[in-house]
Image (tube, rainbow, N blue to C red):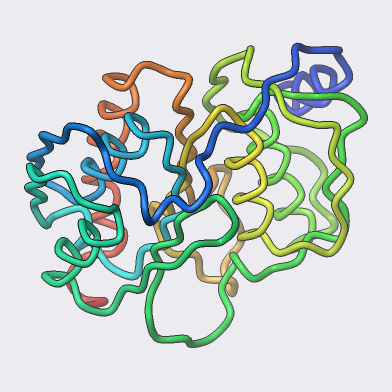
Amino acid sequence: MGRALAIVATLLAAPVHAAGQCIANPLTAVPRKIDIRTRSILEALVDFGQTNSVCFGIELMDDRLATTEADWHEAAPLRDLLESALSHVEGYRVRERGHVVSISPARTGAATWLDVKIPEFATTRRANVQELNNLLFMDLRLVENPHLGGFAGDSLWGDPQDQIGPLDEHDQSMRNLLDLIVESSRGGLWITVRPYNRSRALSNQPFWLMLEYSEPLATNLGRIRGTLREIQSAFGSAQR
C-alpha cells in the first residue's frame, strides 16, 4: 500500500518533458553496422532496438524466442532480419503498430489480458515510464477485481528523467496502452514474461517487463538475460 501511495504522489509532481524517440517506419530501418550474436532472439531485439531506436511490443506464446540463437552480421532492413530469425520460430507474425514493432502469435485465439480494456488511464502531470507501468498494472488489477483494497510488491523505478504525459485515455486495451507508454518515452520495449490465466487471482507482479532505452544497454541486456529463465519456466515447450 505504501508503494502505491508513493507512485500516486509522484504522478502529481511536475517533471521534465522528454519527446518520444521511437523511429518511424521501423521495419525498414537499416543499421550502418551490425554485429549481434546472442543465445536468444530476445537479446538480439534488445540490442538492435536500443542501438537503432526501434521500439518493440513482444507477446510470447512459448519460450522459443528466449532459447533460439540469433546471428546478425549483415546490415539489412529489420523486416529481413526478423524474417530470417523467425524462420526458425514458426507461429509468430511481425507488423507495425504506429512506431512500435509488434511480434505476436500469428494465430488468433481467445482474448488475453492484453485485450482487456482499461476504462480510464489518466495522469494530471507527467510521470516516468516505470511509474506509469506500475499504474497501468494497478488499473488492470482493479478491472479484474474492483474490490482490491491495496497493492504491494517490488517494481523497477527506471529513469526519472524519461517523463511522459499528461495522459487521459479511455477504453483502451492493455496492448494499446503499453504501446503508448513505449512510443511516448525516450524509446524502449515491452515483453510478456509469463501467461496469465484470468480464472486465477492476479499476482502482485506484472506479466510483462518494460525496458527503457535511456538506461545503459548493458543494464537492459542484463535484465533480459535475467528474465530468460523465468520465460522458459513460465511458457516452456509444452505450449509449442
